[in-house]
Length: 413
Ligand SMILES: [Zn+2]
Ligand SMILES: [Zn+2]
Image (cartoon, rainbow, N blue to C red; front, side, top):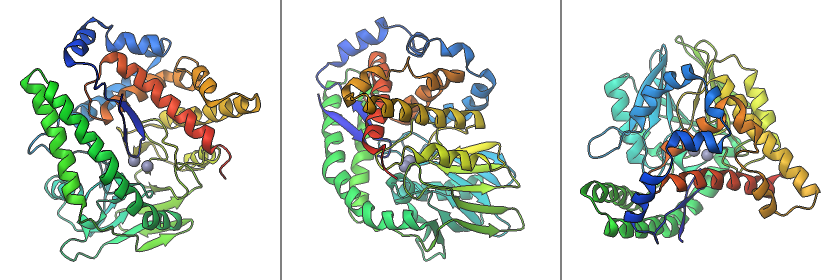
């Protein structure tokens, strides 16, 4: 079975190429419902999930998950405070980061760009239409990953004066890693995905399915074509600890609190509006750890938690509250502890992955966190013809992926 890896989340998808869609549909209908899945796999966590929280996020998240075909906007833009907006990225074949929009008195500051300039250009058009005609003057890249930086050049197209702001470390990693990783994406992972899509298209049994696979193919080929002539816009302002932009509308504090998802993650904090943009350091999915510092990460979140904010605008997924930040932090810490103990007891990675199950992780049971994150993850990526059985396996696979990454990186300092 071919395994596909989507970048940033490193999510391993089971493409299920050797099963025909007819048998998948049969299993689809005969398998217990989603609700059953979450109750069974997460030990009844459903009962304790916050109904209010779900209601708060549901409308925006549901819109964000609507299929993006033809002229549908790539983002769902939501006002979160006066002069602060959250652009939630809709599902695409290649994942895009969310962006946060701070409307200053004369200009605009944006947090993070997307995986390709055309996606960011689409966001710029949407901002002009839905938010403000003021020019974008600053772009903060929360960290060096492709889905947060490769859209930068859309902001300087036409010669606009824009400063790109990042930590020193993120700036260095962008310059070093993006060309290497983009080449791998274009040479290996996108062609593999295209091959898989062709196979699914050939087996599709309805017009809807064919339309879905055609759209995936269109997005993948458009990415290939666009990125052949890509040039990266690097940071123009880098800093070690903190960079503050003061404006009549509000102050914007761009801060490095320590290593976490990468060596150079920053948060963008607005004290007057009590919001913080966190990139992938605190987000609605599972922590992505190939470039991470697992033991430092929870401490870095603790430091960010000292800031006075109510809403967390993360790189992926809907708006988060402080409780979800604590859940996310605790999941990392619990995985660290269990991997560390396992290593001391001489356990292999495979043995550890067998014991670190969804049901055994206390942090996933707390306040329905496992269900919350599984639902968000399920909405972040296109469904590559999976059945519900595969979705459940997929979440355990994702947890196994985190366990493996912690196993490898636990001693990184
Ligand atoms: Zn990301
Ligand atoms: Zn990232």
